[in-house]
Length: 344
Ligand SMILES: [Zn+2]
Ligand SMILES: [Zn+2]
Image (tube, rainbow, N blue to C red; front, side, top):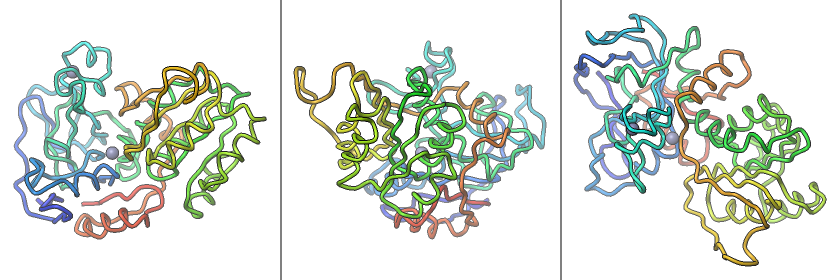
């Protein structure tokens, strides 16, 4: 089969690999679509001694059940399925609570739990072997449309659920970054909360699409943005800020506009930072922060349900699997509106 492989630093190649064998508790999934994420670009720039060299990428994929291991129940050949972003152990206290994103066995205080394409072989291939418990049925959803639900919708849903109590109809939420995760986060906010949504990006085309995705106000993320947001909130600042980018300018903006008692959620892994002063100065009183990562099993079901109801849907740029190098180049150049999805 063909598979998109991390060949060497800066290079992905489409290579020939054997169709994977499946264990008794695994399912062979015929991949219908596999999304590209900024995390894949981070992998692409890992050094030459990275253990991921030679590995198939792809932590966001969906397809159809091709073959079932003998212990697998609950699925039939031909079922359309979404492959989980996180492959938790299924047995630790966190996994038993559905919090595979905080798995204590495959991850730890500093390492992410296991994900396909970031450890095990990923979904940018014709086939993927995966434990049945890491699959969710998607019914009549097209796997190409569904693939981004695994990360680009799940991860924002988790961040939003953690602040859902604050997203009342008189609240203001600021959402920064309208890329893969951000454009779905915006749709989830609009579909599931009554809060006023101020959406920011540096890209004019993404801002132009924002009202259609549910933004009440679309603002250019520039040097004026913080002052504009404070003006729009009578100087009080926002109740919730979701940062889907995490670079220094967006972290600076998030901390500059959060209001007293507000909730900061840093989702993007852009490496920005801010000084926390245990005293007066760095943040308003009562602000809470969460380093949000991935989502839970039940949140995966929630985003599938929203997509099935037609309330959210990724803007998808389709690439044949063989054009993966071009898709990576386009993502890196900021030329992908929404999510790039590779189609085997
Ligand atoms: Zn990702
Ligand atoms: Zn676990």
